[in-house]
Length: 482
Ligand SMILES: *Cc1c(COP(=O)(O)O)cnc(C)c1O
Image (cartoon, rainbow, N blue to C red; front, side, top):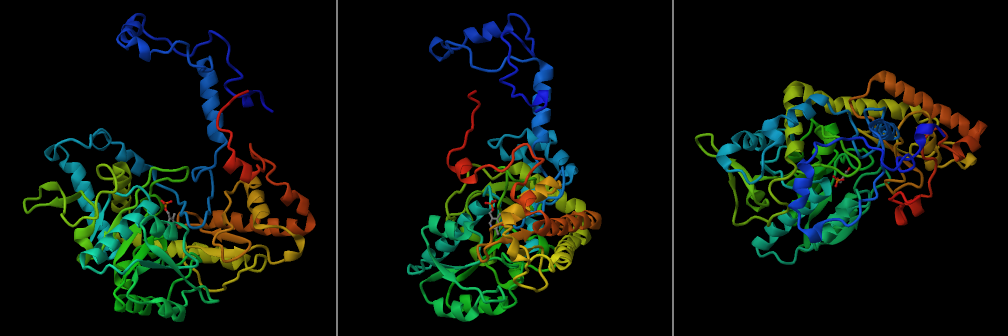
C-alpha cells in the first residue's frame, strides 16, 4: 500500500483546514437560519489540508477506467470517444445558464437547438418528428410504447395488449412493455441468430399492439427479412418499434423509417457523443412517423412561419414523461457532434464501426468460439474460448483483460450462449489499438492453457481485485465507517 492510498478519513487531524473564509460574513448568514434547522454538532467530515484533498481526488480518478484512459469494447454500449469540443459547446453560458421557466422569447437560441436537432435526426433515421423529453433509452422505450398504446386506444382498438419481443432482445425491451401495462410475447430466433419468421407468423393476430426490434440485432446481425416482418406486422394492424440504442452501425447507411418502423428511440449517450456509464445524464429521444406525430408527449418545440420558436402541446399527446424538455446539454452535444462531422463524415461512422468489429472477429475466431460465423455489423459475440478443456470462463478472460489495460467486453449477455463475450470496438479506434487488443486476447487464450491460475486469480493490477459480485450488488458498503 502506498502512503497516499490511505482514505481521506484516515488522514483527518482535528483542526486541520484547507480553506479560509472572510471573517464575519458567514456568522451573519448563519444567524438568518432558523434555530431549529441548525445542526447541534458539526458534521463528521474529515479535517484535512488542501493538498490532502487534491491528492485524494486525483488518486481516486486514477482508480477509474474510462474511454479517456483506454480501449472500452463494451458490447451494446457504444463506448466511443466523445470529442471534447462538444463539451465546450454545451458549456457556453447561453446554453448552460438558461432556466427552463424562462419566457420563450428569451430562449429562442435554445429552442432552435431542439428544432435543428429534430431536423438532423429525422434525416438520419427517416422518422417524421421527434420528442426530446425522455432521459434514457429505456425511458424512450416506455414513451414510444405509450405512443403505440395511445394510437390503438384512439382508434378504439382496445384488444391490442400484446407486444412481440425477440428472445435476443435487450432486457429493457420486455421490461418497458411490462411497465407500460402490455403483455410480452416472445418470438424465437433461428439457429442463424435471426427472427424466426414462421414463429412470428404464428403469434400475429388482432391482439398484437406491435413488435419491438433492433436491427442489427443483439448479436450484431442484420435482420435480412425486415421487409417481410414489417409487412406481416402492419398487415395484422400492429406497429413496429425500433430500439435504436445501437444506431451507430447504420449511421448514414440505412434508416429505420425506410425499413418500415413507425416508432423508435435513439440513445444520444451512445451514438451521439455524450459520455456515459455510471448512470447519466443521457437522452433517449423518440421519433415517430407522420401518422403518430400527434401522440408524442408534451411539450414540443415548433417553428412558425416567421421563424419564431414556440413550446406547444397537443390534445392527443400520450401525457408528459418528464419535467420540462429532457436533458438539454446532451442535446447540444449531439447537435455539435452532427454539425462538426457533417453529412459526409457521419456516413463514415457506420461502415468504420462495422469494419473494426469484423477485423477483430476474423482475427480471433480461431481461438475464441464464434457461434454465428457471418459478417457482423458493429459488434459480435464469442461464446468463450475455442478450447473448452481448460475451464476458463468469460469472466476470467474479462478480468485478465483489465490487467493488460483494456476495459472488459460485455459478458454473459446476450443470454443465448453460456459464455457470451460481446465485443463492440466502435469507429473511433485506430488499427494499432485494435491490433494491441487482438494480441492481448490471443495472449490470454495462450495463458488459458499454459497458466490457467493466472486467469482464475485475475485481475492482479487493479485497485479492486475480484469482489464477490452478488454480495456487492445485494449488500453494498457505500460509506466509510472505519
Ligand atoms: C443501452 C441499451 C438500451 C437502454 O438504454 P439506457 O439509456 O441504458 O436506458 C436499450 N436497448 C439497447 C439495445 C441498448 O443497447
